[in-house]
Amino acid sequence: FFFQAEDGIRDIGVTGVQTCALPICLPDLFEAFGHLYHRASDREKDQLILVVIGRGITLNTPRFTALLHHHKIPEHAVRLLGARDDIPALLTIFDCFVMPSHSESFPNVLAEAMAAARPCVSTTVGDCAIVLNDKDYLVPAQAPQELFATIEKIRTLSNEDRAVLGEKNRDRVMTHYRPNMMIKLFDRIFGVS
Image (cartoon, rainbow, N blue to C red; front, side, top):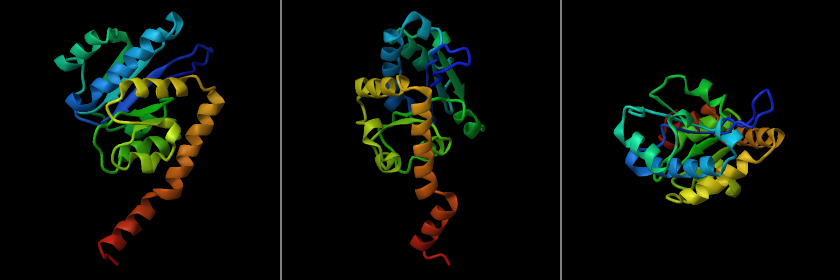
């Protein structure tokens, strides 16, 4: 999400990054974004952007075009970036990260977004609830209306409150999921000395 421009205009954007197979969870993200878009003021609509990143995620994919038309989302409000190798840099520009997964094990990209001090919304699948550990920003899978409501909750926060939430997420990841800590835990689990 992009929420606050330097000129004071409220910018709104949503991001989902390589989190799921298209037929499974991206329709939920597009539905939630559609609700957000159609309930926004005209001024906000001009700034509302959904960014989705991952292999095969382009406007040339008929399924994406169908989702846009189905939810009446104009193409200018969506950036389908395809596969990227600069995810850490991209995460720093989003004001909110959304993980709409229906199935997950350890959510690496959620932890990466948290490490980038982003406010995050996630479904409760797999280890997502454990990693995010904030019931205010967790929703059940396959619940696009709840996903929308939770994204809207973050959108309406002040810049300062979003920054505090992002720092809280970063602190959680740095406390519990630092790479060197994870390596030691895996070594211990697999008996590596």
